[in-house]
Amino acid sequence: MDKVRVRFAPSPTGFLHVGNARTALFNWLFARQSEGVFILRIEDTDIKRSASEYESRLKKDLCWLGLDWDEGPDIGGRFGPYRQSLRIDIYRSYTQKLLEEGKAYYCFCSLQELEKERKRAISLGKMPVYSGRCQAISLEEARRRVDAGEQAAVRLRTPEKGDIRYNDLVRGTLNFDLKLIGDPILVRSNELPAYNYAVVIDDSLMEITHVIRGEDHISNTPRQILIYKALSLTPPQFVHLSLVMGKDNTRLSKRHGATAIDQFEKQGILSSSLFNYLALLGWAPPEGEEVLTKNELVELFNLKKVSRSAAIFDYDKLHWINRQHIKELSSRQKAELAYPYLKESKLLPEKMTDAHWEWLEKAVESLIERVDRFSDLPEQFVKLFEFSPSRMEDKTKEELETDCALRVIYLFAEKISRLDSFDYDKFASLTHEIKRETGCKGKDLYHPLRVALTARDSGLDLDKFIPLVEKGAKLSFPKPLKNCSQRISEVLNFLK
Ligand code: GLU
Image 1 (spheres, rainbow, N blue to C red):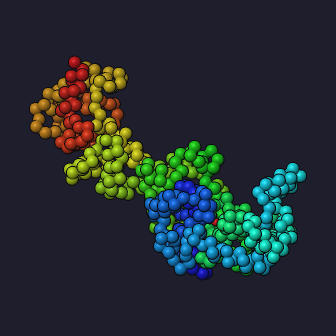
Image 2: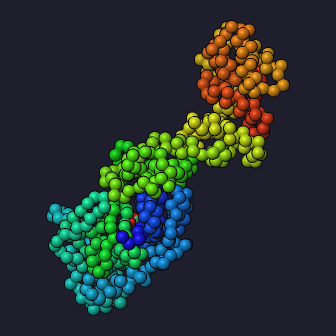
Image 3: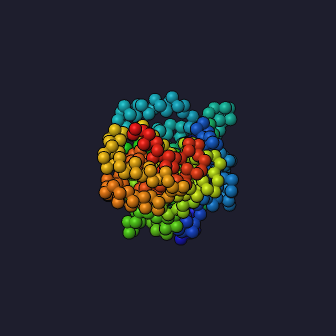
């Protein structure tokens, strides 16, 4: 087989979202596993809707996902330029050839006329296909009218009858009746190439071997094949990927949650997690394993095994995968990823000392298990920093007011006040003494202490909580962290 060459060809008219990121990713996986070439081509001929801001965002999001390209705008390559607006002359030369050969013709029909024709066809119960009226105008006459300033599109002359058949790697043989296609527009009256036309010329000149794209392009493919034929070019292998849907079986949209790639990034989904999850949208590894690294995916991915049924985007599963990828990170990496969210929530200072980082690593290690995403961490950290017995729920407060609880916490307060420093080992020996002196044990002993130290009735285990607040109380934070002895005395004041 020829060296695999695939491309991702976004139109810079919006952000990179789940659907087209999955398309880019399948192309990339296929290129990398076949040691082929992955090309980025910017399809910006819709000048009204294209914006360079979108292009830079698209490129940034692809980079964040780890989808690097071998040829493309900025880096170039043998088949550039890789931005369609810079290839207009190339398309123009093919158009002249097609016109000369009589395979294409100028169409002078106005939008109003075409609309009228369309409505008439629909009212007669026919498919609204262009009638081919302008086919009768000779090239000479058409050129005269164009030179005189009349606006014209260029259409491909297609056979009236017959069908177009092609083999899709995922869907098998697909057949289209030419009667339903009509003469596709190649060049619009504003002289810019239509999508179907530019894409054929580019895919062919860039020697693309496999066109892997969304199934919304299935109906464009027969038109593109007609153009390949007219230009005597060989079409590539087509692969159409199913749509990405929400759990309710409607097309994935903002209603379902985040859809733009940078939103996932902002939420603290790791790029390796999103990469992993996108690869599972319409494909599954042979052994059904779900948590996979980029390299494992390159190894296992199989384009032939891509499913033709709709892929359902399951946010819960993405979050679960994210948890698994987070587990693989070092404490330092976790702390660094958590920091921006905690700084933003004004829990951590702008300037972090080594001691702050050391503390943060431990704190993140303890609290990360409680969340799916880094963006949910501040909520957990707030529970460490906020300590207000007066805001305890009544039910929690009552837990402190039993006879046993009161004896335990008063004794604890007395003992802790005699210590110069406190840590979990000291907590363990104090509780041992308190048990002996009060006869309270098990839940009766530990639960009142947990409530007294946290003003909550659930949360981190004390062996994690105590070192965090003791060490943290020695550091400076926007909102200071109280140590155990401060906590106990506040609780006692409150209970008085
Ligand atoms: N620019 C087209 C799109 O974004 C590309 C389609 C294709 O891959 O052919 O949908």
